[in-house]
Image 1 (cartoon, rainbow, N blue to C red):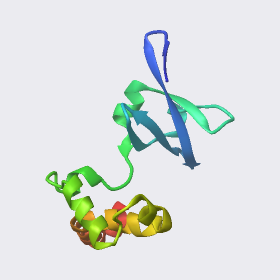
Image 2: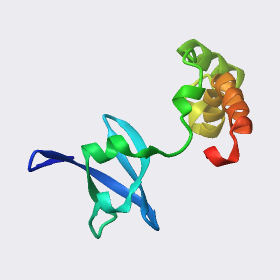
Image 3: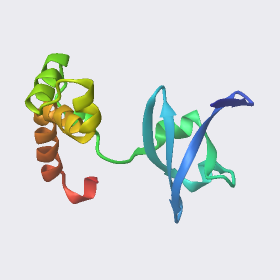
Image 4: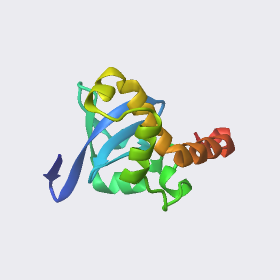
Length: 132
């Protein structure tokens, strides 16, 4: 939720933690959750773990965490056909099969995402400690 205060737009944020003069905040940016580090003084904190920050302060914040989007391939596609293939390999052919073995069905879906998971593991191994 956004608020307008004397021509400044205030953004509702979740305060993750504050340490010293720095606060880690999170907000919903048009459906994507973002986290940044900002000076503690720019966060108007409330008692419920929420706060308000000006739009300008968000723009000047330091991004927090790994930039997954920049590291993952843009070409990953999990098709319905690939999921169907994995369900069949796992023996999930009927509603009853699914109801008796929902965890097997979940593993089949993960199997369809195997290439993505392999790349994710490789990315994690190559991230320097100071970046996480």
